[in-house]
Image 1 (tube, one colour):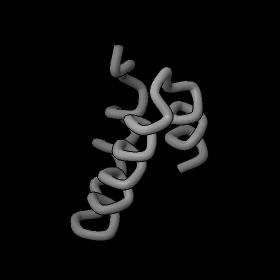
Image 2 (tube, helix red, strand yellow):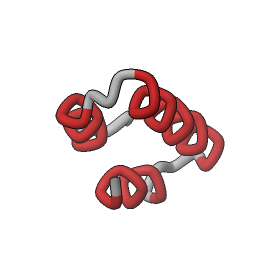
Image 3 (cartoon, one colour):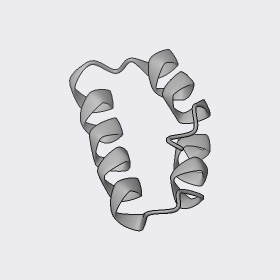
Image 4 (spheres, one colour):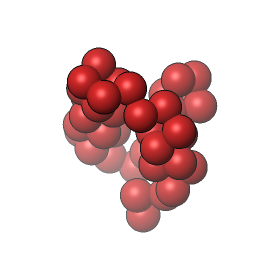
Length: 46
């Protein structure tokens, strides 16, 4: 999770970072796709 937060903090848009973090948390709470979340965090939104 730390990697995800660090990646989101680097995001150019704070609003988008918030949305991504919220969606990531929702996914974790709903499905817990740990590996998919890590992969998504490694991919740059830009």
